[in-house]
Length: 158
DNA sequence: GCCAACGTTGGC
DNA sequence: GCCAACGTTGGC
Image 1 (tube, rainbow, N blue to C red):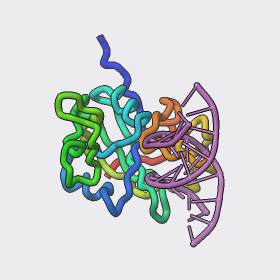
Image 2: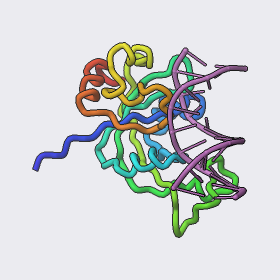
Image 3: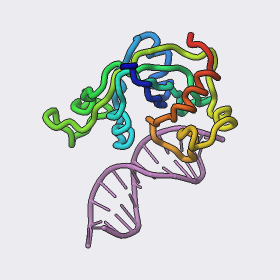
């Protein structure tokens, strides 16, 4: 049977906290610290082989900078149990963890940042949910047609 | 700094 | 279950 088509996602991170260069250096990373149920549920629906656009948020200019691949799913987020961690959740416990995450592998960066502004010029909020006004979700699905178009537009990875 | 658009919390 | 108050995200 042919390998299933990957699904595509957009995952935000602030470059000061964890940017594409951090990921490039590490090769892969646990996408931990997600404390929003909707974002968590999107992560739960990810499959190995899915691809995710790395989006730099809360910076100038915000936009898509690279591409990642899901290499592990259903992992418990270790930061929820550590009282000293920023993402500690006192309502969670190891026998009943509330937050989980996936592991992502670095595939590459694009030759230039694809800014939010230029994304707005080209796509509607339906084609690219990150464009929805006031959107705060840090993990979003991207329709396959938009994803393919983006990949074509962004060109080869570096 | 401002503010839109949510999500969360807690009183009732 | 309702809702007010508050917190967070993230663009501008």
